Amino acid sequence: MENSLNKVMPLKKAIKTFVKTGAHISIGGFTINRNPMAAVYEIIRQKINDLHLYAHSNGMGLDELIGAGCISKLEIAYAGNGKAAPTCICFARAVQNNTILFEDYSNYMMSLRFMAGAMGVPFLPTLSGFGSDILTKWGFSKSMRKEDSKIVNKKLAVVDNPFGDWAGASKVVLVPAINPDVTIIHVQMADAMGTCSIQGLTFSDIEQVKASRHVIVTCEKLVEKAELRQNPDLNQIPFIHVSAVCHVPMGAYPTAVFGHYDYDSQYLRRFALAAKTTDKFKEYQADCIYGVKDHEAFLKIIGQKQIDKITADPRTGYSVNMKRD
Image 1 (cartoon, rainbow, N blue to C red):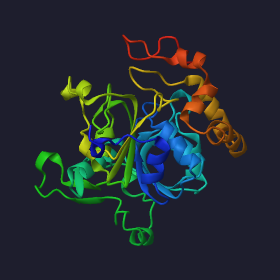
Image 2: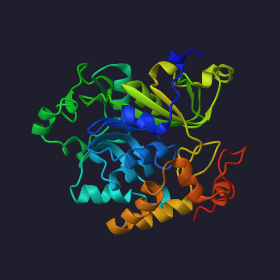
Image 3: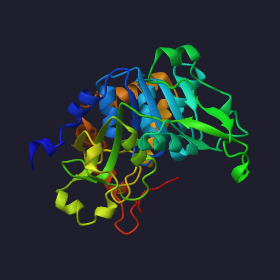
């Protein structure tokens, strides 16, 4: 394989290369599924801050970044950690205490925004948001929008339907495209060039990748391109979009990766308890993030016994041994 087609690099180097202070970033996954946690922890260890984060409906990754003080601005539809925290705790506290600037959209709106970015168009129309405060509650001021060229000049726009009342709508909502500086996702398989295969639900990851200027992929399995070519219809992300490939087994832990491992309900509960107070949360991150050199060292703290409990059953794709109460 030619070196120019080999994008494999250590995660620490990928984060240092592509994620800069003040960058606009996007992370993949959905609530407690396929969050790029190893990358999130590395961003925290490298103390990269003042980040503008876009996420569809994220969970653990978002809450860790906010709790560590890495995020200054956020655009999102929803943030939750399943039963452990139906609304992410650090996220809620930061919004309530005005320690981050926050602008919210519906789930469908965020999907369309990433899709617009992927399509290369400035906006897409929708009927989502009518009848809600999403249309009237804006989180970023006009002066801020003028000062930062990466922030769109309007949250959204309500306009007349140019086709009259066609399809039963006299007005439509236009939502602006998102084009992050870097998107980070975790996948089941990737090759050295960056072609990726995602098993199970893809959420908005594909659109996030195609909308972004740079893309960091962490993967469970780093495979030869010949293996991915056996089922090319299952390769949702072409290598042309990917900037770096990082082989990080269990790189989404403690969130789930379909076919490999489930989310760790015990860890999520521990996290939720720690996140309730800033002092306990600092102790938690000192032990589990700053206190280890990388994701592999972090997993050693968790231990093989716990990892075995969440290992996915090959038939169902998730753990049949984990207690979920």
